[in-house]
Length: 353
Image (tube, rainbow, N blue to C red; front, side, top):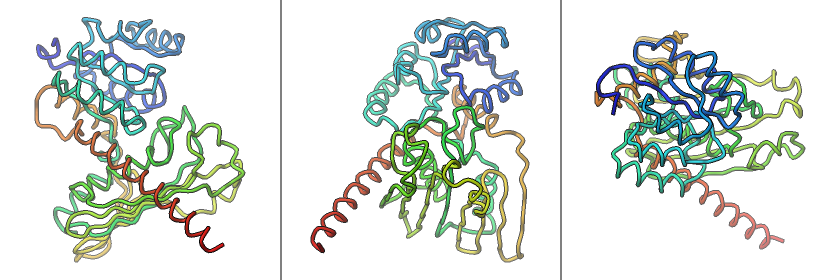
């Protein structure tokens, strides 16, 4: 691969949406000594042409053309496109590393199929599990290793306000209009795995439709606007996360009344309160502390730096294919537990009547 002859990776970007505009395009500009975008593709042809004109790179008319270009070393999949996981298959055949920001748990059979190709080709593959690199996450991990001790209980609440295709990516938005169990549910489950430094040994999920007169139901593939999961980790650690989607058209100004969403982490020697992505308060033996963390380097820079290290064969904190597969299988367990719970509730209801 051409990338092995130099430190600067030549990037082919597939899917030009909000992640590109708000996260990766600025990151590439600041990491110009390590990345250079040489080709872009989007299913909206004019969007790709306009972006290519701004960057001074090529706009391809097909995904295969982009993947097989000799001036493309790595493939970035940033927005779901009509062809699904086909680009991953092409990248494996071309032996080109893959950065994948698609909602990986949305299609488990497709991921299992391409995983076999990735392993056979030994192609570097990094799923974008961005919450691992939020400033509060990294600070919490430092505190766990120093003053707070091992986590014992995580209680979290996440809120979304509809799906905005061009909104800034972050803890309260989605990358694609998928069920809450996948985004942000799957990413929050991965975050809990990262905090507890291990996979859950037991999972239970629950979901339901709270606001029956929602205006945005056609934009979401699931009718549920509330999801929660309960995860048990080794040595008795527990995480309980709730996710709710609030429709501004239904609630109006009542949304402003709600307190900030956040995550409480109780540990062996203290506790912490997190407001994603950059504020943390904690108490340990020395007292109470409150930090508003800097957002530089940005999450995009940190993600791309770890991918760069992975491609170069250097030590990296990048999530892997194994992380993606584990997360997908765990979400499947959650979905099955939700279905079983609903069946039990219906049976009990019939018996009572």
